[in-house]
Length: 158
Length: 286
Image (cartoon, rainbow over the protein chains, first blue to last red):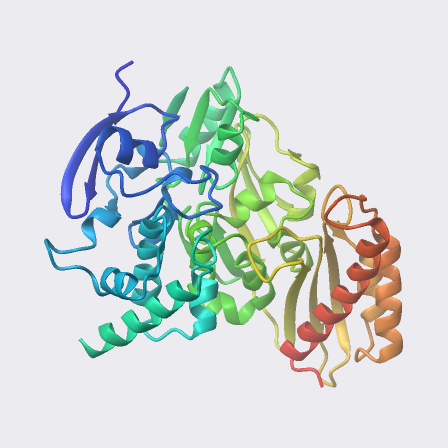
């Protein structure tokens, strides 16, 4: 089967691929394009490990079909750092040890980036509600929330 | 399986009507893809409706609002005019899922998924919202409560799809509200819920009232008697007591791990009281 031809933009680069009609964007990113930063946790939109941004909207890539990316702009964790220069959120996650096993981390970083772009000065409660779609079984969330607060302060000063 | 992205309602309806096997409409996909993944549905045709003109927009018309079937719930929350006119509908729509799900899920999808616990549906029923149904034989406009007929079932015929939800323009002194009970603070499915929509007269007495309950029966319930009891009142304690009693009596809930029949009846009444109180305040009542 040839599949559906899709032209899209991923992290600023024009990308073309063929995919099957039932293939999710997550499967396309990981298995066809080698972008394995987005993780499959649940595959049903509950855990947020596959979070990406499509046309400025935070979504679970497991709940988007690969074919739907036609003509869209997709941002993944692979586009977050600029070369060796980490995004402030990535830097603060390291400094606060806001990760242990790391599976949820790409999703948290993308979701936190989206949160801070829409609300540069979130309260702790807004951070917790804003990241409620991302599950972490290791950290207990406190370190993640502190890292996001710290990154928000850095980004406001920048 | 085929995936198509028609550019017009006519093309979408035509494809749905002539589909041989199971066909599914894709807007946000937050129910559809989960059901496909779980093996509950294996569509032979997926019709992505997001490229159809107007379906991704909220239009403010002379009559009120027209919310396209492909508008994500997050966009409802970002629309100031809609938030001001119908805060109960918007708060209900914005309770569905996470930020990630909000960017995709739609109120039309919530309605057509036909879950008795759908958050936006009691608010839409209370708001007397209407659905514009397009089909092979043309268009018709029906009350939203006429869409779900049971868990996972709708009254839509083969080839039919909802293209928009209509909400009336608000008169002065009007307010609505939606509340649900969940054992957590977010990211959960309603154990029971209530939507209330009120308009008041110049003196603050309730002129019209609609009360709807979610997760209390096989479909979302419009409790007409509950609306009637509020009319003429200023939500005194006795009226609120009667409201709770009527709502508890109207429920036909199931007993399950999420809540017992007794619990759901009791909480339905309490939520109706609280939603009515909020709607009354929003309408400017004191």
